Length: 120
Image (cartoon, rainbow, N blue to C red; front, side, top):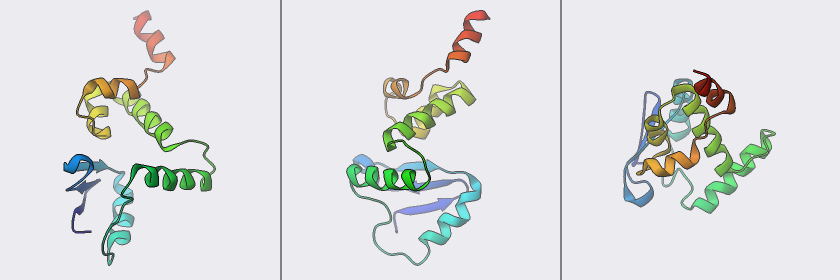
């Protein structure tokens, strides 16, 4: 709990993967709900292993009626952000990648965007 600060539209995790700080961006309307969820908690807030995180996200997706893995949802997020912004740097920052080369594998250009670009 002491490693998480919830600010306006972001969660700052001071010791994340590789013991590096990480910022997770969230819609502003979720910040009060997250703050209420964190309030009064002690110890660990988030899963400590990637396998556990995948299981939790998979269960939540199924409960929401979504058929997708955590990894698939991450690719979808990257693709949607890239479609909105056209900026791989933004996608890189959201996903927390050290290398833009990793980000390129996540963000896919949608077919209609490619066709418009070629037509231009």
